[in-house]
Amino acid sequence: MTKPNAHSTVFTTNKSQAVRLPKAVALPNSVKRVEIVKVGQARLIVPAGMSWDTFFDGAKVSDDFMTSRAQPAAQAREDL
Image 1 (cartoon, rainbow, N blue to C red):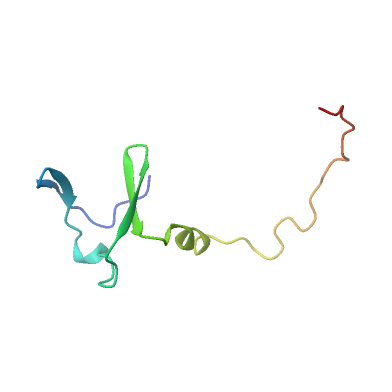
Image 2 (cartoon, rainbow, N blue to C red):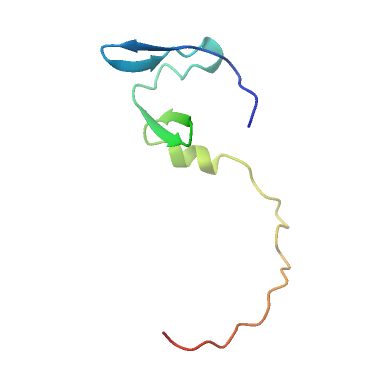
């Protein structure tokens, strides 16, 4: 698990849970709607419609990644 960037508390308002985001991890002022993804015990909050953008902005591989891959010959298999 990664080290947290900030800590906050969970509170209830109007029968819904809420979390106040500290300034260090606040979303930009332009974000008005978010998507919440449940991942085990974690909750991932991303601007609405941006979850795939974040994925593709993530880690990259080098240009020579798998340029020569040891691939066995195709197997002859019975049709289904």
